[in-house]
Image 1 (cartoon, rainbow, N blue to C red):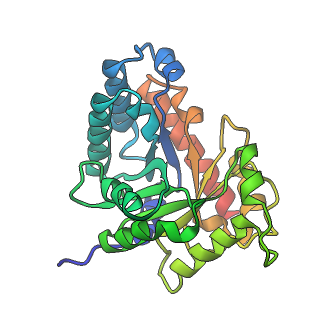
Image 2: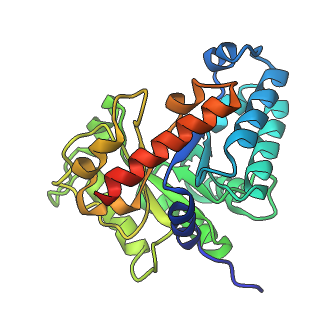
Image 3: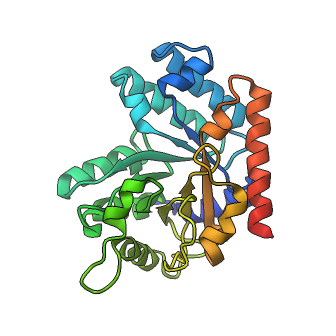
Length: 280
């Protein structure tokens, strides 16, 4: 069997070549309307194709939000399949934002849907929820290693409600979020240039110096743009781990569509701002 280059290595190369920006593909009804599209399958397909055509050759990562496709049933999932295939064919990495989490055979089935190379939804990485216990993710961890894919585990999310779970303190004195980061550091131990098991850490959370973000893996950082964080905030939030941050921008870029030139200019501006902030 031919060895597969791990996701962490492929992501590092893409970030170095194209900049670290991740653009979300979030076709919610209001955004489709702002593009002059109907909230139906035709609108969904047109939107997704235009985003990929406009940006696939210039951004490192796309992050389609599965729910916005699944709401249309099987036809929406078919559009998602084509979107993933087209993006990957153009050389852009795809992180499927599905936030799956369960136990046993169910978790294994979720993993197979998104991390098995024979699946029509195969993606370079998948977002997962560890809140049935980190060990519940083992089927996804194992399949990701086997297929050269990656995971992004919810650790310190930007939504206010997340704190009641993620900052809860265990009997050993560590928070739940810190525990998840420690698990990921263990998964990535010894990986070069970067491990394939990342964390989702909100860019809007301010000073995170009490958490060890140096997990030797990528940090997917939502919150840039419409949610209020800027590229200039990244060094203060992520500290020494900032070089591994993958900032996610959705509305901040997509609001400029359907004008292709404006989409590209916006993505380029965000990427340049991130690159400047990280290298300062």
